[in-house]
Length: 73
Image 1 (cartoon, one colour):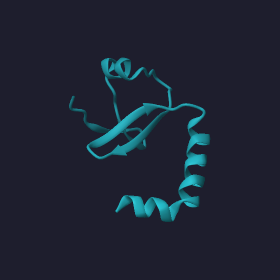
Image 2: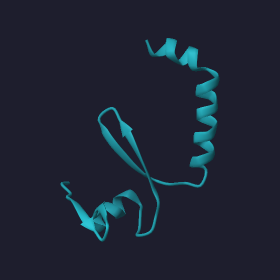
Image 3: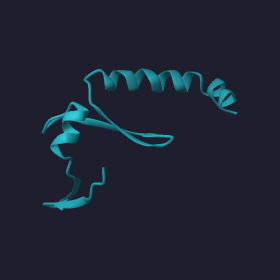
């Protein structure tokens, strides 16, 4: 699906067709998370527990930074 980035008022946005919103399980006003994947980007519905999950992940990554660097090699 090819979409075009457009000027919306004083902002720039991407208008998602109704079909895509349905496939993503989203509706107008929902918040989303956009994450970069090795093969592109992923759009997911935002969940209230996402902030807590990221807080925990950052804590673990900081605590085990050396181990994670070694595993990444």
